[in-house]
Image (cartoon, rainbow, N blue to C red; front, side, top):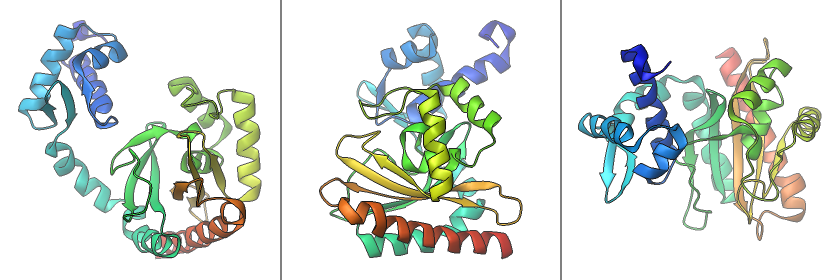
Length: 254
């Protein structure tokens, strides 16, 4: 719906702009205009309103998410069944591995970070609370996608594409579907530096044990210097899948 269609079109564009700001670590007016295919004047008007409402803050020439996002999204996150049931498991994963540990869910065809634990030696990534990422380029995203219905996988691909984050990213749809079949059979997904060079990840899906609904995924990410060998292929996958199973039981039967 275009802005000529009235208020709904304007609101849609504001949310598109807000999504871009929230998913970035600071983005300029010109960069936003290029991504939403609107004039810089139009984008500036939307941004000015979002800044006035506290949803966006201006930091020099860059725009970042404002505290209004936290006041609106915080209660939603707190009510999500994964947030309540998975925090202890994520804390345990972090204390056991020493690596960045996350709980993720799917939102509008992308993964969204609900909770994270990290330490001084953990990799510092742009995966903060509320951050959304493409599903095909992360272990957590692939863990969830592997248990989507085929038509839902196709919907994600049609909506967001398979953009390359680097030379390791899966960008071919047939290759992705083959990878998802492996993930489904194996029970966990691996990120072989597919989003960020030098960073590997392991993730397991979290599903309802009676109706197989996908709630999200639990993941561990670390540098290739530490997440390597048996630790990458055996030790961390075992820890991740074991914690995922515990969360599944809690969510299904609590």
